Image (cartoon, rainbow, N blue to C red):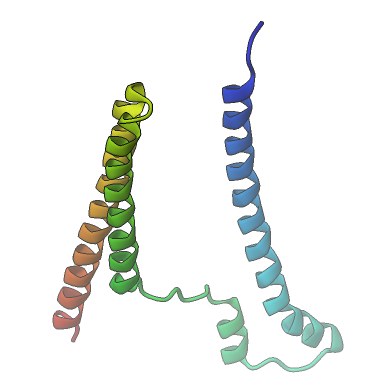
Length: 136
């Protein structure tokens, strides 16, 4: 008989990702509709519209710059978690010897993600400082 545990976990993961993506798209759509509602109401009433207001409402939303501090803090927390999982692999070996390599591998992966976040923070800082010096 087949066990559906791992398969059901994979299915649940992909369903979660799909729902999260669709929810983000729907939220953006709703936010855009709410922003355009005053413009639609003004047109229906026959009011004169200021071109600046129309342009501002129809312009895409400006996104805030990525703060490297958030990446660095996330990286530090992730590195600490990776180190903790690596230590856990050594401690678990005393109880269940065959889990050493899988848990150690998981800790190394988490450690690498943390280091990547720290490198990304440094890259964002460098890019932002170069963009400021090249501004007219």
